[in-house]
Length: 180
View 1 (tube, one colour):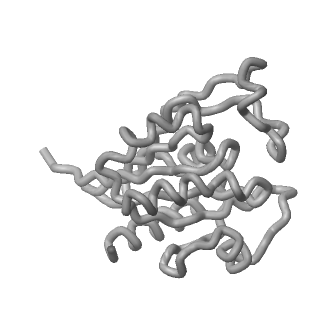
View 2 (cartoon, rainbow, N blue to C red):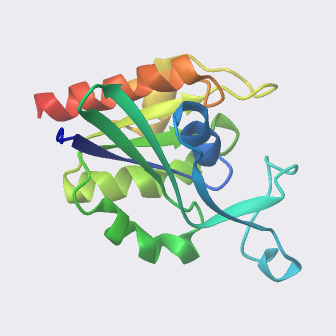
């Protein structure tokens, strides 16, 4: 039996940033999703400003897998975006090689907690700006400045719906993790 080396990468970011979409776009297996419909009870705590069309939310995690080459697999764990589900993050982060912080320029401030989380824990991460249709596009350096990112933290533009775009983001994470 051949052995498989598995790399664990977290996908984090604010509510509605596209984490579930990113995992689904690249996964070679049917992704595990723990999405539930947004409810009236959650309206006071789940601001949908900027993402008014959002009807579901991840309540535990998303999970996907992509084989990089024979014997090397990347396991993707998408974190829930709302702070009331952040208690799951510590468990998901165990053994993580690195992370993607998915940023949405319509709600850029929502990715600050993810950036802080990975900085505090010393987990290498890449910030990937999800270029949504209809959202204002900003140069990468302007987003870097707005987020006050350390120059050593890679920032890339991506489309979470595009398999090739997501693969490029994952390559950035793996290369960063190997370099640190």
